Length: 211
Image (cartoon, rainbow, N blue to C red; front, side, top):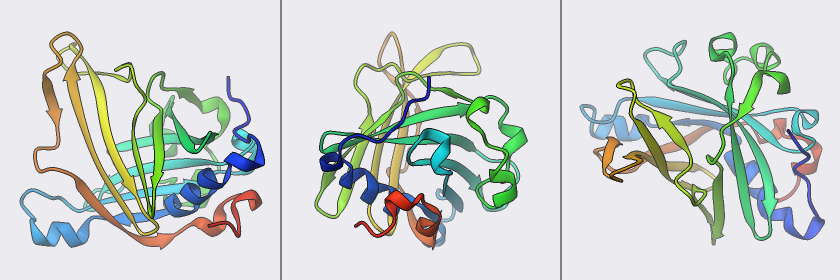
């Protein structure tokens, strides 16, 4: 069940600031040019959703390879939830992602993303803690964010994320649920992205003018 993500006034400021920093388009081109063989050019979109979607702040996110923008690598919906001084970001999967491909770039396609076309990814929330000018996040405890492999085996996700006003840095890795050995993920370290377009003016009014 989707519930409102607005809590008391004293604990929403970090959630609003993170939302304003997050909203935008990001590119890895700077790092691709430095190491083109190991760092493909990737773009990430965090496009704000209308207030009524969650009764608060939410995003549609899309990750694409620059050479193939109409075949996204990842598509998700995020719900921003204040949690004390921290920020909980719930992740939702799209039931039929192909229907919404391009929503990060096209507002008409974004309008096709509605609450009835998503489902919660249990155990996959990212918990962000503010450290000065950076929000540092990781998957909620419990190793319950499960991702199946093509061979039928199951892995759990370990994710590291850092967000500033102008950057997104992340690394995802998958571990075997029984042996806890790493079986997939980045071999070149953290993936780094710079914000090249700001979408914070598309956020609901509650997030305007803070941070």
